[in-house]
Image 1 (cartoon, rainbow, N blue to C red):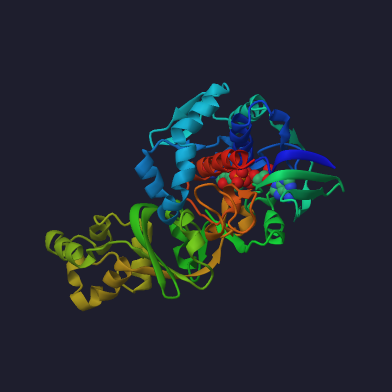
Image 2: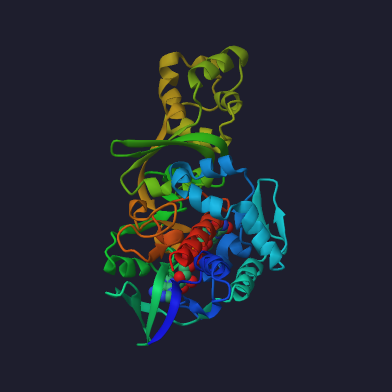
Length: 409
Ligand SMILES: Cc1cc2nc3c(=O)[nH]c(=O)nc-3n(C[C@H](O)[C@H](O)[C@H](O)COP(=O)(O)OP(=O)(O)OC[C@H]3O[C@@H](n4cnc5c(N)ncnc54)[C@H](O)[C@@H]3O)c2cc1C
């Protein structure tokens, strides 16, 4: 049986960064780090990220970066400190890939090709002396009485290692090789597995057909409530109307909080009463639709709302009294829908679920249940927003897992 000191399962950004940091920590004893990748090439998901352009991190300052990770920021702090956004950019630059920072803070390879980032990481893996084996899909793992691990590949080959890092990713876009099966490996070593569910996806809404004409309308910095049973999460961000529901950053970043049957409410105009009262006073003779347009709510949306509430768009706004406008004020303050469907995981950009964070030591990425086992990347049960946070944290957790595994040898 072939033996390595550290085996890493998965050659996505998490696995590649784990190999680089472990290789650097163990310099001189190189060839003993092995990445097993089930596909014929590394980083297939990385290659399609950011529409093939790969927004691999965000240049926010540390406190803002971690705050953007919301409830996961605190847990991910040690990983981020081990390889932060500046260090990741330096790592990639050092392998010959220049970067550019967009006005919104998103960081891309200068050539806007995801392959540049993937190849830079592979270059660093080689320099760190780690080996990569393709089409080496791990079918099962077993903890040995001696403390190490025995792995069986789909091909039937057996391998052994002292330390094991599972970086098999989530379950979105399964054709990239990360099909969620990595959870089975972790389960066989005693871990719980929170089933994967959609993250970074759109939502379809019940009874949204009437609003299909608003598709394409976008609203900046809206306050949305994501209501799931007794839980309510409030988020602010840009919202986009689609033919069947909502999309846009605020939906993508929060869709993992809801499922079919839950509700979403948009506060289109928090001070609707005051604003419309003023418009009534100001706009003598102006038609209801034209007057309401001054609120910033898109005309297409106002048109449907007025029709639904049997209010005329051509009558002057002041011809309506408070009671007649009351349903409109209500809907402007809470534009509420039941969710028919959250985008399928197979086409969403990420997945929530995976190994519970409570089962992984945040300071080392080592399993709390199975010594010698480490985790990195999207297989962990965190969920991060769009903007380069997912690839950065895959790299950061990978980096910490790799250096920690090397330290425990
Ligand atoms: C369309 C799309 C666009 C995206 N855009 C962005 C973006 O612009 N910015 C951003 O930050 N994030 C983006 N993401 C998310 C980001 O790509 C992922 O979060 C990130 O790749 C996760 O890294 P990972 O290393 O944990 O897992 P993965 O990249 O999924 O890699 C896991 C690897 O493990 C291998 N593997 C799985 N099981 C086994 C096994 N049993 N044996 C051997 N190998 C196995 C897989 O083949 C795969 O190569 C996007 C995702 C998608 C789908």
